[in-house]
Image (cartoon, rainbow, N blue to C red):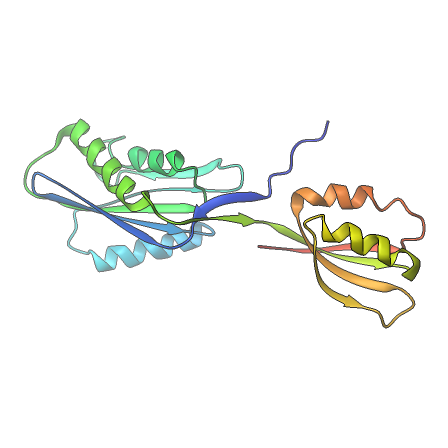
Length: 208
């Protein structure tokens, strides 16, 4: 049995902010959709410049369709009191390709490890709670070369198969259809290509 192909994930539809205050300390959470680690570094640099007087810029992120690529950073706070609680909120909301940075302005009173965990978790929660999300689908671009006698059957099939026809070319002796379909539907399409009359299929770059 072939492994399931994962081609969609849930992430933030727009950047969000959240606030939490405790014993004079102010925690400001910034949540973003991110494509890769380069985008993460840009957001971190931007916030460090914006909040250059803040004592800590703690963060966590998760990337990838399988959600296995992540990092949690305490930025000088006691180990496990900031990055992990932030990451826990990303996971609680079922998100990936998501970054949360929590900026802390120290209020003069230490909160202790439990207080810090609560504060970073609460600030992250406020940023994500009721935040709009979106399901991103990774799609494969495919060119399908069909003889004219097969066109009608294939058009009927494509209408109900979550496969979008981006363009069609009827100028040659055969029809060339450019399709966009979720990665998980590609094996189904390939299984249907047993007809010896179909001359060719070409897969091209991924799109989102």
